[in-house]
Amino acid sequence: MKVSSYQPGQPCWVELASNDALSARHFYSALFDWGLKDMPMPEGVYTMFTLGEDDVGAMFQMPEFMAQADTPTHWGIYFAVADVAASAQLVQQHGGSVVMGPHDVGDAGSMVLCQDPEGAHFSIWQAKQHVGCMRKDENSTLCWVELACRDTQKAGEFYTKVFGWQSSVQDMSGFEYTEWHTSAGPQGGMMAMTEEWGDLPAHWMSYFMVENCDASAAKAAELGGKVCVPPTDIANVGRFAVLNDPQGGVFSVITLTTPS
Image 1 (cartoon, helix red, strand yellow):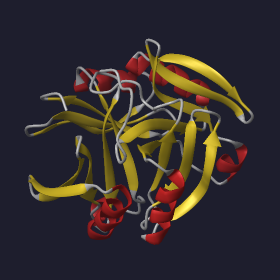
Image 2 (cartoon, helix red, strand yellow; image 1 turned 90 degrees about the vertical axis):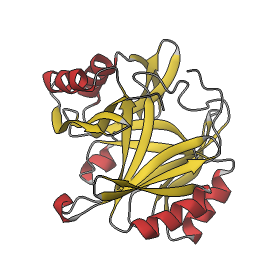
Image 3 (tube, one colour; image 1 turned 45 degrees about the vertical axis):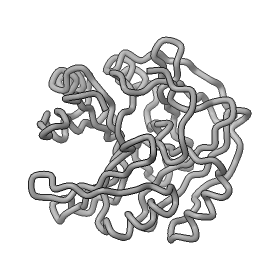
């Protein structure tokens, strides 16, 4: 489905920071059948992932200062806002922090990189000429985002105040799962990290829609990735798997029982 705008609070863009961009280009273009569109920038090259002529995400080679800090390859998620400066103030007022920005990205829009109170990174985006992901609700596009954290009550209070989300809690086979909603419907979820997660920090997970979860997981492994959580059914939702790209970047694929 083509997208021309996003409401405030909706996930609107996804971006990979990779420590081996050449390998990542091959892996993701083969896995999702994405096209690649390179855009020179002062720090190197910003590569758009495309479906046809439509941008659905992007990637870049991590700059040296990130590599020296041992920053792992990771996917970043952007949420649409009406005013990045005002939203950045809300982030700080409610216990989060601003890591970088606000700054303009040419005439595409303005962004801020933030951390929530538990340290999970996310970005906010005020669109100008670039709305963000130009397609959704179809295969090889971002279809869901999910926060894994240890203090779900604190996180819930933070995000509902920053983005104006409404929340609902569901019992998912023995554990509580929070869904966040805007007037446009469900936008993402949240789950608590238990002791089994070890010392993994709080983080946002990107889910990409695929036609066949099992086939996509097998293909990721063939391309040099790793299956972290094998294909698993979620009642009344679909079948998902958690994957690593060859550099360790974590993401999920899901085949939905019904379109989201």
